[in-house]
Length: 302
Image: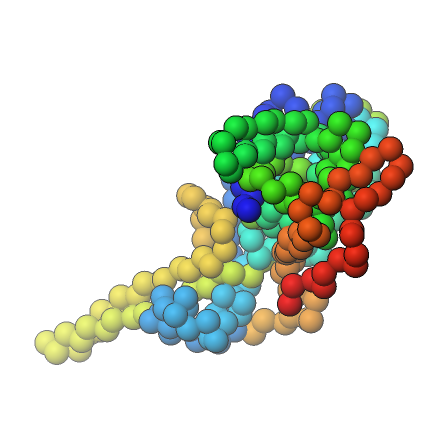
């Protein structure tokens, strides 16, 4: 028995119209500048071989100041602005937002990794499609289902009856028409605002981020005829995150960094699927009568 997971993008059903009036998304910056700091020498060879030397932790030792210019649509009244396209190692508590004519009620950093478990958990109460294939005949049957329980054991409501996923004895494929808000491979900064009127504004978003490093190398050429020295230097930049900054001006600074213990990036939330079922054919119940377990459920897998 196996289960396949499919995600189908359907922009027309992303959210009810009421949310379209109170939520705004800034997908990417219009412009960005990057300043990368370091407080100790970095060997270029070690920097380029970071993936082979994970113990060196060069990706966490670097610290960058990123200043972005963004165009945002400010909702009237209570609203939410979601900033996407941030550096993967963003330190959310360092974020400063300027130029927004609204009261900022709260700020949150969301970093839920998209996975089968998180998709199920975030979709509780949503309607999905379940396609079941008979392994003997190849016949497929598609049913609309409502997810009633998520990652700790998926329960579906189909035709008014509740069924545990993966317990029908057939190959099951769950199709989602949209990805729930907040799931992805990059962090999202959510700002809840309160404004008198809606409007489009240019704002500046500045924040610290880890995951960027730099090293410098020099070549000196001595001219023996006149004793002059020709010094050539170049800088190697490294971005260990999943966000690029094309055409962004970059400055590098070496010195003493003053960081407290709170200057750490937001860590992604990882959820793991824990579906399990009891003897096949015994997990369906309805009409107020439960006939599912046939005994105590087995212990969870180690």
